[in-house]
Amino acid sequence: MNSETQLDNRLRLCAEFVRPGARAADIGTDHAYLPVWLCRHNICPSVIAADVNPEPLSRGRITVAQAGMEDKISLRLSDGLAQIAEDEVDDIIIAGMGGELIADIITACPYAADKHFILQPMTKSEALISRLCANGYIIDRQDCCVAGKKCYTVLSVFYGGTVRQHDELYRYTGELHPRENETHLRFLRGHIERLRKQAKGEARFAALADRLEEFCGNG
Image 1 (cartoon, helix red, strand yellow):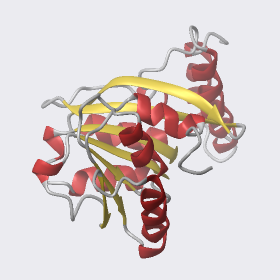
Image 2 (cartoon, one colour):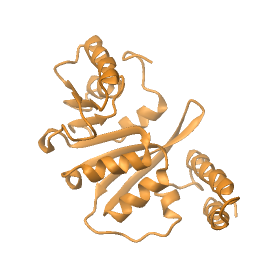
Image 3 (cartoon, helix red, strand yellow):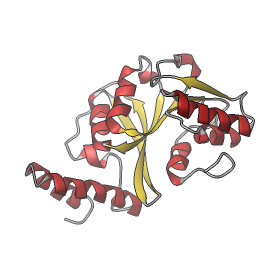
């Protein structure tokens, strides 16, 4: 992939969740493909491309320079949102990380309650959803896509101000609709498969897998 091509389905779905006109931050930007795409398509007037490591940030700097977007995209060495000020961004994208790390980044941000998050966990989406719910965040939209033969989910998240009680199944299903959407079903089948494997060591996971099968319409 280069900055002249379209994003893959995973990053494209993240881009679709960004609100037009929002100033964005892309946390863990790597090559900065997403910031370039957002600015090139006039979705965002400005984007902060941030990474905790200098090497991926240097790759992103090359991408931004080749696209001629140094005036719109700021590259920043930052551990999560530590080096990004509250008044610089509206929408925050955290993609390509484990769900627990994403939750840690949000928890460590002092102004997280005032922002819109677009989250794409590579693993442990159930842990991310659990922590979001426990800390008063609401998933207002969730979708899935297939990229490179793998199925991913993306969540749009706001702070709701109150802790909402959800049962354990919601940690896995979130706001997905597997009976209506084949890609949602494929994503949840991945959860079911992993729960079946976990059930060999702990029986309660078998019951949870059964409930998830029923939710998907396969029970």
